[in-house]
Image 1 (cartoon, chains in turn brown, purple, red, yellow):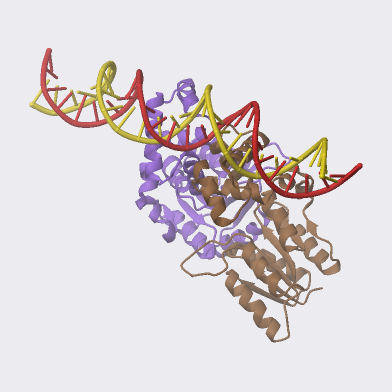
Image 2 (cartoon, helix red, strand yellow):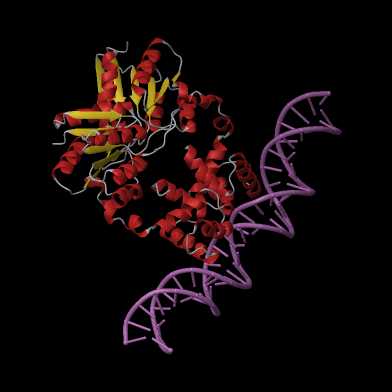
Length: 222
Length: 222
DNA sequence: CTATACTTTACGGATTTCCGTAAGGATAGT
DNA sequence: ACTATCCTTACGGAAATCCGTAAAGTATAG
């Protein structure tokens, strides 16, 4: 079993249970931190001392508070860790059930497992940790397997997400062309943008852009 | 101290910590349930047996699963319990930090405390329970006190929420008049509706209705 | 009952979004 | 090099929204 594991989780209620799971798996060294920045520091430090962490278990959403933090979410922490220490195994662990976000963790950061906090998360986390140690296969809760079969998460691409994101921050279709040119997204003609919004409206059965953004927000796409 | 407390919380990770808090407060009878419906059943049952619960600690969001449930959220559970057993003290306990939802719990259901799950929730929950036992005053985390000072939550009324809700489900301004008449909301003329949307746009500094709905969703208003 | 202030409704023109058609460009196969 | 196909862009009229002004309706004080 792993001998050195780091937990990044801001909600104090949860660490007790996570620690308990790891203890039951006989992990001797369990370190716990409430901030992403601290987590990265600890991982760096341990690597320098030639006693690196073998597994990172991290939440996705961290509440902002008085502290100034560089890394503000689990995604950012995961990205940073993957960049610097690709050999560390990573399990994300969150209340999040929005398929797009979960899928992108596997696709972009190649995480080793995802456990959804729910009625059955303790045994699931145990399985995920065991699996990460034993194999190189990814672990995903049964109930979430639909994510990789689900069309939505596969057929909606980054362009769509960007577009919806700009809509949601109030960019008018008129200004979208300029905006897209500004940040280098193509295609960026007014006509193309109109057409794509229309496709999305049909895809999500939305009546208008407002409805579309509401749906996308509910799905966790933006 | 309370002698009989019910916890309603669907995430298995959390109950360990909550139980621990209550044990430290020397509560002898701590019952735990993962479903709102079960919680209400237990409360009814205990009342029938003349050994009622004195305190309910409940989460707000419960994940839907295979089980058919009547009560689907903490709000609904709280509403039902307040209706039937007004003397039971209630503490809500959630990751939720959206001011409108929290404020409405105090305003509509007169809950006795709200604890936000965060980096410091264990001592907070302890304080909230002690406070609920000792006094009839409401308990709210320090960091959330702004909610009752915040203009937004006070100046936005139910009409606004309804309006934004309909926008977010794709009702056009054209159809809004008919919709409002249908469900008996006034004022309902197209002109009034336009004006109100305009007010909201100014209030929230939104460029258009799409932006407005996105902001409202981020604030947890809808 | 009347004057006043306030809210709601009606209306119309400017702006934006919607949506179809067609022209222009790039790419791949022959 | 030619053609078929697909993607992007241009354009224009219909529909929806935006926004100001004015009329109609309501409540209240005197």
